[in-house]
Length: 239
Image 1 (cartoon, rainbow, N blue to C red):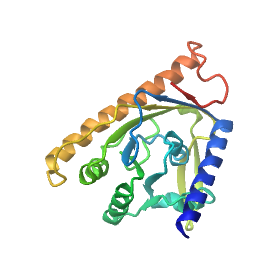
Image 2: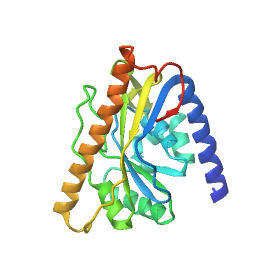
Image 3: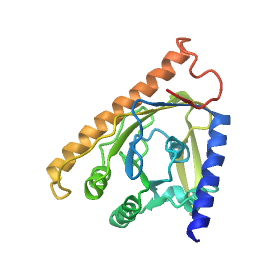
Image 4: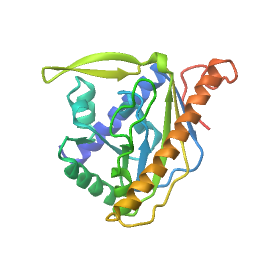
């Protein structure tokens, strides 16, 4: 496909996902600080399989997601990911995905990374942070923006999809409140080759993402007890 086709499919797909999100989800986005323009890395927690199809809505700019290859084989949703130009992360070929992400950043695009590299466990426990987001930001000298997602856990549906002849379990989220909190942009200092610093920065970043996810979760809990009308109606609100 040419660049025009890629852009057309990306924005058409994102518009469709946005409409579905507004119809099926009570989507709520709070931006605590202005989003930097141009190239940046958005770093997000990953509570559900649905996240890659919702999270591009938080940036008005063209955003590319680094996502596990298996999602590209899910019927319909996988086609959307492929046509939108998102980057598959193939097991054992992380370097290739990393280099593709670098090229997009150098062209001024936004890259979205799920810091755990996996979907969080059903009980909400998170995996250790991967270092890819920090290494991307340091190598391309772009800001990182931590983002925390909160969902209503009882609305998560465990569904199997048949992918390449195998049954894959997905934690899908089709309806209910979906809260996103966008934190303060971070400018990182250091060398990519300094592994100790990279790991320390990744842990710090993870703490910020989790704190923001707790803020998102708290808004859902408060709304559920009648303490807020923020989630009354399927709307996309910006705080």
